[in-house]
Length: 207
Image 1 (cartoon, rainbow, N blue to C red):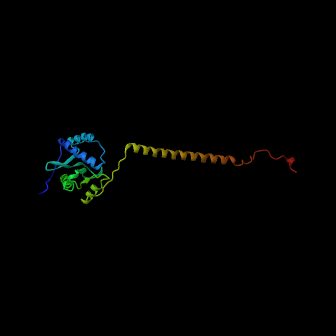
Image 2 (cartoon, rainbow, N blue to C red):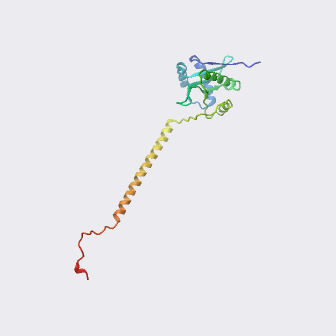
Image 3 (cartoon, rainbow, N blue to C red):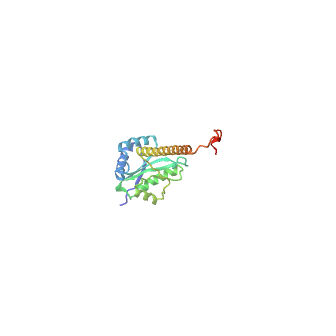
């Protein structure tokens, strides 16, 4: 019996709850997506409504089995032509290795070609080795590395660097003051030359 075909279409705001069910399975499957489902639901609804993101929804026999969330921007702020970037691609575990991911990427490729883009980018979480290897097999290679730091940690680290710089400046000031004091002390210890205008020796004292 032939396997049911994978159908991919662009999702609308009316598909938010379906997408959130898929997101919840991705969240618990990957473990790295810490944003709450409720906060993601509100942001996703706004983004789909204003068109700031596109979501491709994959179904098999009418059942939602995966999605790809796309944005459109250059890889670098001053780069060339913007094109679709797959920020998150997820296939439910029971439908993996059945062509769902490829179907989603094929549709993203078609969108990129329609926009005149020269490449398609994909974002991969650093701990998702399976997805990273999957992308590498398809020809995706690292282009940029983006790192993030919690603001509380960054504030603490930057404050530490600032205090270190202040300490170094203070140490330099103290060293210069000590050097100046040492030079003044050496100057004060030198013998004072006789004043040529002083009194001559008493002649009667000369034998």
